[in-house]
Length: 363
Ligand code: CP3
Image (cartoon, rainbow, N blue to C red; front, top):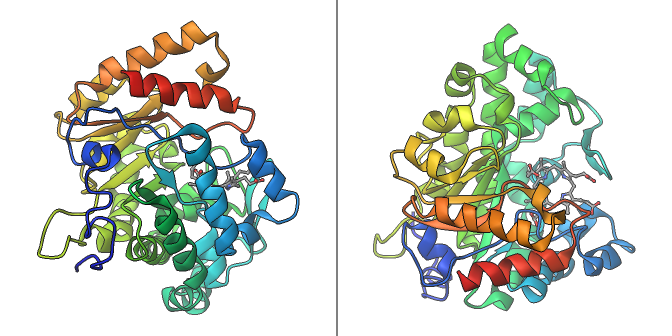
């Protein structure tokens, strides 16, 4: 499974980028930094575009998605772009009736709760339908990668569990009780549901990589609500399935694998389990210090994170001390990509993010 010849990792455009090197366990001279949700409502230039176009429409309009993806590169000088899209886009393209409600998140017209619901989804909204509809994603990625030159683009997908949790609940939820109940009341249906979301995530990730993404991140935003045994037995196999194709991709001639990042929020108790997913690096939220996370991983993985977003509003010297602490602890791991421990809050002051990039590059 070779990357295309004109891929930025095949022709060398992004091979030596600090982000790619750090994700492969190297220590480039410059500490790479990017922010989850760096494109979006914290930027006035994003809010300006969104006055005239809906969120999901913007994701499917290649010119608009490219422009929004590039905004934080121009403004902050971050070391990577993250493709502007959303974890529900593959579901939408496969035919699922979903909307993103401002201030809330994904809302589904028909929650998926029974064996019959799951069977219908697999029948009607399968990976083939997604493959047929995915052209706008490929077009937006190609266009973006063309503009980015030597700056890598990170592609992403929602993890099968996070997608399933939204689908079962029908809307955002705190404890995902309905989803976790289905897992135990009807494990076979649960497995089929996760098989399906995993296949869609696989297709979405693969399309972004084939179109030029130099790394991918799997977001498991809700994995933290799971117990260790449930994660291991009922969730991790589906995350492996979602990553299967991109993890098998190699540079032409059988070279290095594609850098992959796994990120689960609130998953300090799951580190030993996520270590078995086969990704090259792990994102760590703000709750677990990086040196501690690295020790638990046996110092085997480059780490990404883990500035606490709550420091963004703190006095400059308080934020800087926090950043120094994160960078110092991150030195224990074989590589470090500086990031927040979760997404940029919409209320963040963009100048503070720019300052973090400058500070990281001075370190
Ligand atoms: O810059 C980037 O990070 C790239 C784009 C991106 C978006 N969503 C754009 C977006 C990425 C990587 C995501 C992932 C995503 N979406 C996750 C996983 C990461 C995480 O935060 O845990 C999740 C759980 C979602 C689902 C989702 N989509 C939520 C919870 C929301 C917020 C709803 C709200 O209004 O607060 C969305 C909408 C969304 N996705 C926005 C953006 C920029 C806001 C839309 C707007 O402009 O109104």
